[in-house]
Image (cartoon, rainbow, N blue to C red):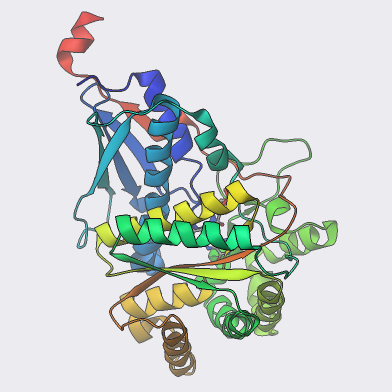
Length: 380
Ligand SMILES: Cc1cc2nc3c(=O)[nH]c(=O)nc-3n(C[C@H](O)[C@H](O)[C@H](O)COP(=O)(O)O)c2cc1C
């Protein structure tokens, strides 16, 4: 079986790297083996520092799941070829760079290349503005349901739920209004978020990592406020003054402007199930992009569920811990989930103009190595 050439693999990796990741940290790199017959995806552990290490593993695997979906679509769209993916067990590994998944060329079926399939990969972005709060149209609803059905068939280890009644959206808004202050009052979290904000100069390309201030806030005043808050000492004082609560109220307003929320949960926190959840999240996000729906992860309750699972009470103050347990109970009840399910993502969905600014990505040279077999190298 012929593998992908270096140039072909670069196109696939460029598409994979457009996947979303928490704070745009891009916790991945790629290695192609055996003259392009396979592509291995590594989780970069240097992003898993300090206390957030265990929860960062979950966040990274969900994001890497999204890179897998992009790679599958790119192989099909550019070249009409299929990959088969498999998860590699990583449960107990924490440090270093860990190979978490392998994609292998599978030429049992071939289709006509169709580059239109890739448009959504490059158009997809996180849209953090207020949406118009109008209900989903029948056509949008049926696209959501079709994607949900496709995921159920292909990934029975993942559960998807659509919340689109006003009452459900209001309940989620209340939940987010409590979850966000609890999250931002953890200094390592607020510090991490604000220190990942980047302030590029006018007319510059977006910075390769982190989130450009322009994609977070539309107005100049908000951008000035973000610059101020990214100073660690200011963040601390602002949180002490109750700024987290203010952010929580903002979250509620954002939630109320949505047309729907979609939750993604995995059957377990195994590498395979979390990667599958990431694939499912990306399928939904690409479908929304295709039909013109705006998307923003509303990850605060999901993050609490990850911290509870991985760090338990040690992560919170004694005063916060009962509130967190209550919040997670409310969230999982809302999802109608059995206890062992692991929430993987909550997406806010609605109608809004697309962002003009895009986040940057690290270069392909930095992300990707193509390994040839010795015989082929000698041939050249
Ligand atoms: C696991 C995960 C959690 C995320 N959490 C949030 C979030 O809570 N709020 C938010 O606005 N964006 C969130 N994002 C979106 C990222 O910030 C975004 O994907 C990244 O900055 C790249 O930007 P892009 O999606 O526009 O390409 C999350 C993404 C992932 C994969």
